[in-house]
Length: 225
Image (cartoon, rainbow, N blue to C red; front, side, top):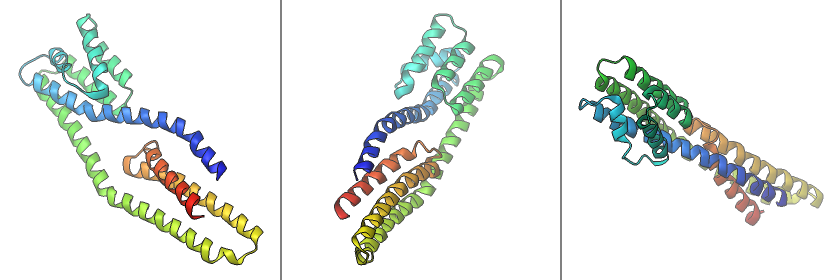
């Protein structure tokens, strides 16, 4: 138990920082469509793309707000729009947003109908986000099922330990206890990471599930073994 607790504490600090970074990136991705929608609304009234972006800076976009304001500030200082928006894409450091930034750059340079093209970009982003939400909704029952299976697994371990293991001698009981404890902790770690990859297509997202399952396992072992 001491080893498992030490591992838990040791992992919590890096897990916290890694997951915080992931959450920030996720928030940026969630707010980016709102920014694009605002730019599209502005361009549809006849504004240039540069003016539309500058006007959009006054809205709150969460973690994305400072980056958008920084981009607008660069534009106001005379930095060419294509340079400013590319710098914005690099600062955000997200592959999907980077692709959309490239499209916006091309629209600013070559489009004859900026409003229409920005509308198409927004529609594509909205469709992508909608498909992501639908995927999560469809997979949610599987998430619940796997949590349920995990609890069943803990129940089976408890039954085996309480009804079968006691018939062995004390040395074997201690050995089996160690095996079962390590088994449930390993299961909680790998199941948590698997859930993150399955539901959100990211092992980092699985750190949340891993922490929950590891905590449940720790309580289970501490009070029931």
